[in-house]
View: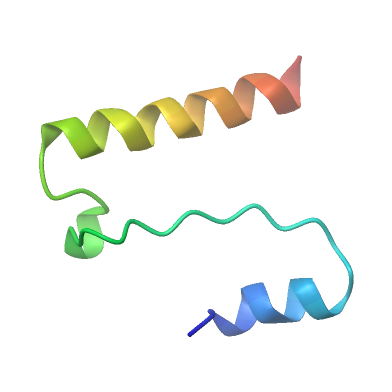
Length: 52
């Protein structure tokens, strides 16, 4: 099920970048250090690509 905000963005034809960790992790977003490192690398890569 998509988040309502995400669904709204898709309906408006906007570019939506979305990643959902299928392995869980709760509110912290990562279940272990390897997943946290992976999520951090996604975040920094996104920022680098948007700012540069």
